[in-house]
Length: 232
Image (cartoon, rainbow, N blue to C red; front, side, top):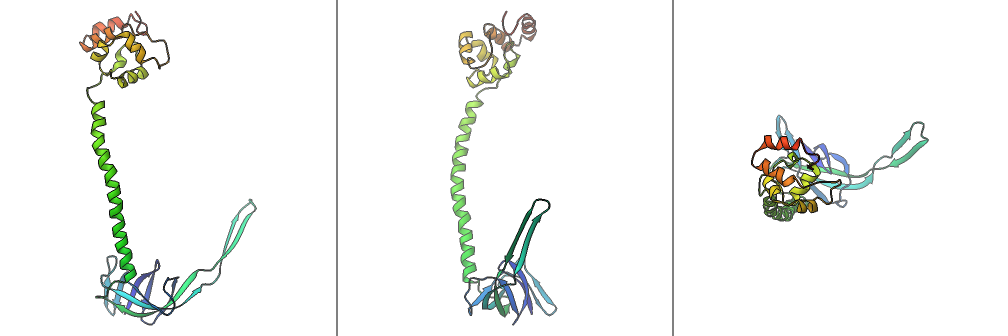
């Protein structure tokens, strides 16, 4: 019987009484350790494949000793830059011997069970924290949207003398339609657009807006041909 099992982040094909070198384990020398992430088990012609792991399967082993692997030279060089770096590395390893392979019915290792429970608990806490701000934002969003969409805005740029900047400034001040502009006084409009650069004559804007609000576009167009930036 053989098994393919994940140990310390790497996959190994193991059999009973086989010695394997794996990345350093936290288990002390001489103690037993179990691995639950068994991906495949082969017993003669019968092969069981997990999805991704086989439920109830387990590989038990004993830690023989902790050691360091052979030295590896890491050399880096950049051409025509005068850059050369040479380092040595020895990987920390653990030598283990496989004692048994169980295909089903094994109890999960304590450490693995504790980690899985901790991982399950963490998303719940994160979700609880994340849902509260989202629900508050959803409650606040309709109120903000209601202020902006109280009425259907008109294209104020159709008024002679009004450009994109002035149009957006008027909308922010609550003058979003031709009817709103027709009711406003030229002096009040001048105060609203005081921060916009340029010499803006607002005397004819309410009258132009009144024609636009009434749908008298031909009359408005004829009058605008005689205006110069809103000035008669």
